[in-house]
Amino acid sequence: MKEIEFDVELTAGDLYAFSMRHTYGNISGIFGVVISLSCWVILAVRFGVMDTTARIALFIIGCLFTIVQPVMLYSKSKAQARQNKDINAKLHYILSPDGITVSQGEQEASVKWYDVRKIICTAKAVYLYMSPVRAFIFPQSQCGAQFEEIKSFAAAKVKEYADYDPAQAESAAREDEQRDQEE
Image (cartoon, rainbow, N blue to C red; front, side, top):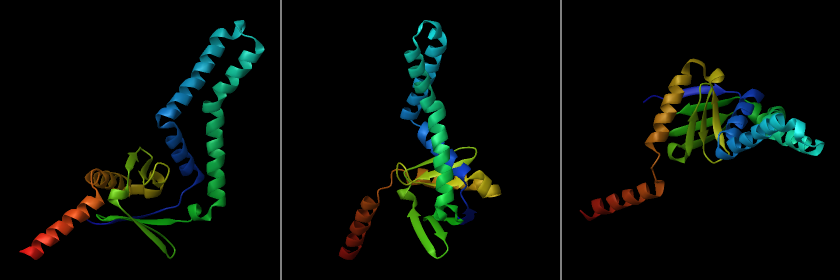
């Protein structure tokens, strides 16, 4: 299999899309939205019979996950993109059968496919998680015509290494080596 090379220069919009997906793409995020929407519904249905304090409380709670948090995530993403020159700089990625190599200037780092914990593919981006909060972000707008190829290649590699245990593989290799030496 050939290598796939591409460059990514993350924008505030890319970081915001990742933050929104990360925040609202799990049970706690969905639960927060349900709470907010429930407050809005209760406020609308019971508006005439509630006292002012209850209306204000429901209004504030309703705003928390549907207005306040998305605005905070956007401002954080915008500030992060503006302040962090490492994120603003162009990153060069190479996806190979062995793993992912990312470089920026003279710095280079490699990640093996078995270190990727999960992959999330959307119509606009591919997110490769190495930890619960750290991920490579490959926006469709940055990858262009290679986006579908990147998406399918990364998904296949993550699936291939889903149950891979490097310690177990090393142990098996040592055992094979010992058997070969004994024979």
